[in-house]
Amino acid sequence: MSIVLTPFARARLFPKDRRLNAIQDATAESFERYINDNVPLKVLDGYAPFCKLHVHRNWTSTRCLTVPITDDNRHLLRSAYEARTKAELPVLVRWFEGVEPPIANYMIVILYSREQMLKEGDTIDADWGVVGCMYTEAPEEIPMAPITMMRNALGVDEGGSGVAMDREAYRQAVAFWESNANWRPKK
Image (cartoon, rainbow, N blue to C red; front, top):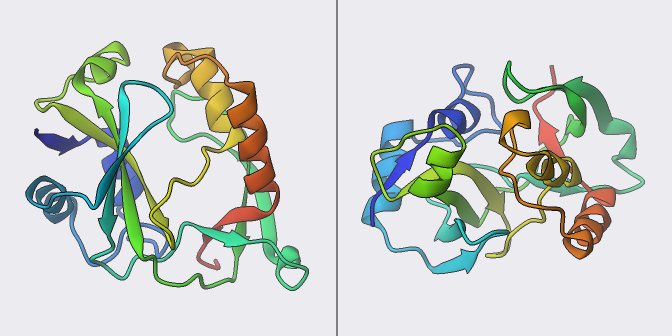
């Protein structure tokens, strides 16, 4: 099985500004080489048949993706309307500024099949394409953000995958994201 880093994931996981909430201590090329050369600890089914999650022990100093919201840190939450790419419409997002999460124990690499990548307009020269990565304390998937589920249900033209909304998964995601948030380095 062969895996490549998609341009979408490359820009998000290895940004030019080398921000602290992206993957640390690795280049895009060394990351791609690592996930091809090392068998994952386990493989999880993703939210659709074309999606797989490869769980690896974190081999970098990359920090956890999310932080629990507490009374002590709630004042550090920020929000804005943002788009992931120039082609997408902005959506409301929130994050912490001024917190320092622990170093993640695991990296959960999110893969889409070559067929799904083609459906979304991306040709890859591999069996699977990396579309994202979660940095976690436990070797388990973090629920997809509710807005990502909605974007996926809207279809490929709106930056999604075309997978219909799963109401129960959506409710579970809301429960998680009501008490957790992503983080960004303080500006």
